[in-house]
Image (cartoon, rainbow, N blue to C red; front, side):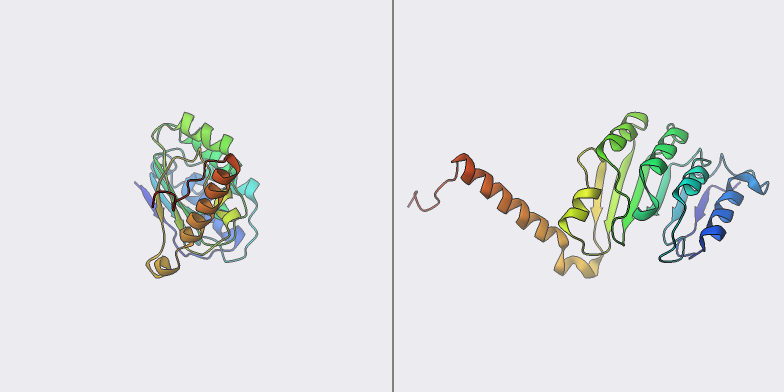
Amino acid sequence: MLQEADFYSCQFTHNEGLQVLKAVTGDLRLKTRRNITTMIIREFFERNTDISLRTFTEVMGRFSALAFLRLDQHYLCDAVLDKLITGCAQTLRHLDIVLNTTVVHAIDSHTWSLAVQRCPSLTVTVRLHEAFTFEDYSRVLVASMPLTRLGFPVQKVLSCPLRSLKEKYEMEREARRESDGTRVNRNFAK
């Protein structure tokens, strides 16, 4: 009985990819739909492939036993997450999201809140494989996301994109203090 499906770097066309997922979910009498608990679909489709999110959402809804799913962020949208947390409410424990292209679909706070309600044990890892803008990070890393891990590839550590986020946060905090009149003069204590 098939429990793990690892499709890392398959680079399927849109139709090929959907056919593979449909086959694994029982369209070709493999009868594995209720058994797959771990699935990896990173770089599943060819780069720059426009995927039909409606069809992809429908196919992802067929996996009812998933506990762990690793996928590229641009395959995940509100509808896909909603379908996953509805179909896998009793089993889904971890989403591992890889951010390696420009943010296309950001999941809103409300959908993440629903995910936490339906799957109370759900945890999320976000892997940032590229340097993006503050706005891109802000669209993905929302407060209601049950984020437990945030990762960067080793070669990116020296130019860590969170450094600029931290600097922006510090500047905004300092500006708020100044506008509130709560700025502390560090030279005053001398």
